[in-house]
Length: 266
Image (cartoon, rainbow, N blue to C red; front, side, top):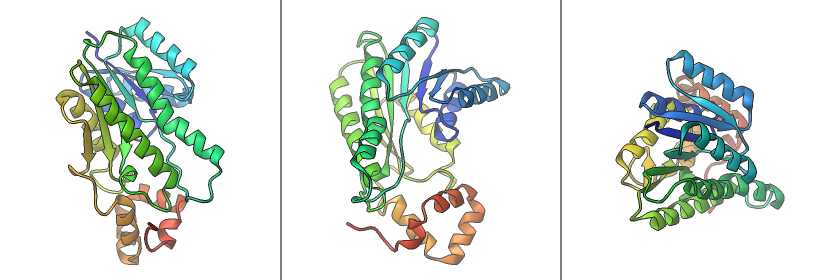
């Protein structure tokens, strides 16, 4: 039986690493995002590594496109076993500046898309069919901050839905997991995409814990954003950190508020 995994939000970071990890574990990932060219390139890369994978272009916020996606996957590969919702707009902002129209768009991406696709996925097969739904959460859900306002509120809403859905599915053969990522990609060994991706594979194997914190086993204190602020306050530590983790340099260039702000506003 083909263990098909639909990876919604198969970007070049965590999403691609998640697809690779599942393929290495014997599953058949279907990479899904809006950019067909990127999907084709990533899929061909997996093929050169001797790994199984396919791709389908679709917008996770368009219910008709995702409905067509699930029908296409079911026709070609049978009912998919696992859905990974890794779609997110992670733009940082404050509580007073972002137009409400943009907040609504980010809510559609980070929350409503997850609700719609999980329902569509569940409608594909009877509840006694072994299936898995994994949502990518974030530490921002537990630590609202003046620079992560919309990200925090949408991740908190996603967390609420994931926990509610898990309670609803209790007693069925559907496992619902929330992978709460408490870090910034590439800023530590633990936060390398390949290492983060293993958490998703293990979650599907174990099918036990609903909210899985990574790194660690509980909510971070202080948050990853507060930790980064403390690090950037020391020029020597910042230099050494950026040498070891070049991806963080791009993050800090895109978010200079971490170099300008001494701490969160509660």
